View 1 (cartoon, rainbow, N blue to C red):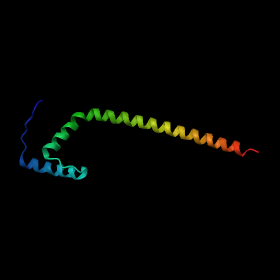
View 2 (view 1 turned 90 degrees about the vertical axis):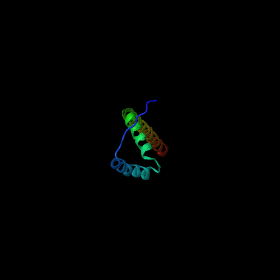
View 3 (view 1 turned 60 degrees about the vertical axis):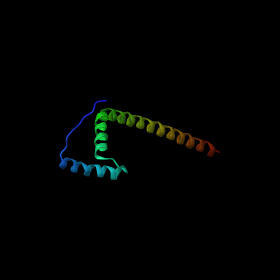
View 4 (view 1 turned 90 degrees about the horizontal axis):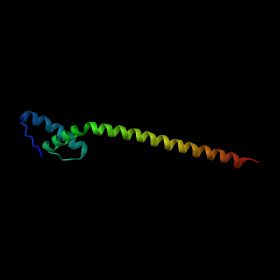
Length: 89
């Protein structure tokens, strides 16, 4: 596995730690600065694939919602028609 070593100034690390702490507070995690950097690099590496997957999920969700609504409307229609027939003299 390739390994990379980078040098960061103390000022950079201090500023990054602010973001790391905010991330940890918001997500209930306890990532170190190194872990946080690794996570974000992984997120960058998958960003396009994730965006495509999210779009596919959105489309599927809309199709599912439309199908559910259509079925509910048909059921209600059938119930209302049945109610009319039951009320006939």
